[in-house]
Length: 303
Image (tube, rainbow, N blue to C red):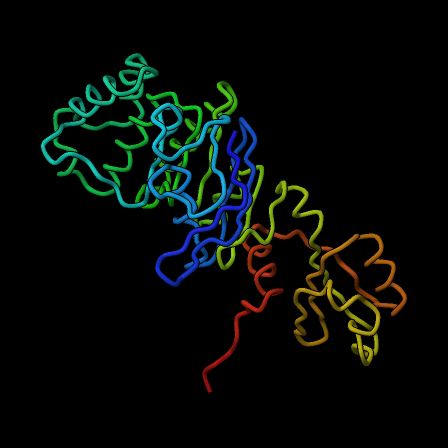
């Protein structure tokens, strides 16, 4: 559904995206992760057809996006910074959208008044940020898009409304095969909704995997020995390139490792640990330790 091949973009002498490739399947929810300045918003603005790429190809449903109204009619883009016509009410904006998008659904619009309890006669720009976000999702869902591109989508919404919005989006994913690409720093929330994840760093995708596969490839191990940690452990037993994080807390050693779980456990057993536990990893931990592996670690700098 969404295909990006060898995408590069520079602003003056700064290269924001470097030969970037991503693939998003139809009917999936793709989480785009990355530290600040990694290029997430730049990539999203290319997907929405706002920026023109220097090199590479971007297609949605097989169609190029930039300056292509047919491709843009398939999608809804919800940025972090919203824009509405200053004089328009919710009802007037709905009428405007209905003239632009042939897929607009008035039945949905009236039905969703039960979900978004807002006065449709009020000017949108006079609403709070959270209420404006509600309007954005309300109208966006009524467009019945094939693709939703979301940049920090539920920032500003209260917890109950966040849950309602995600339920509506995931219902469309399940029933209408809507494709969703979402960028957010709320990794705990993304973990509940995404089935595929891409981690962007310095303008390139460093990891792109199914979320379950990503969790299967990373392991959090808690290890203890009867007579203290053996000299040279774990570097002398385990492949150094597979060790993403090593931390000692008293007599307990915490390891974050890549690779085949059974092979790793077999190697560790050779050192005769008295405790060897495999703990579950959250998406936030995966994100942190993947970036630690390329030098983005947290360091103590205060003396």
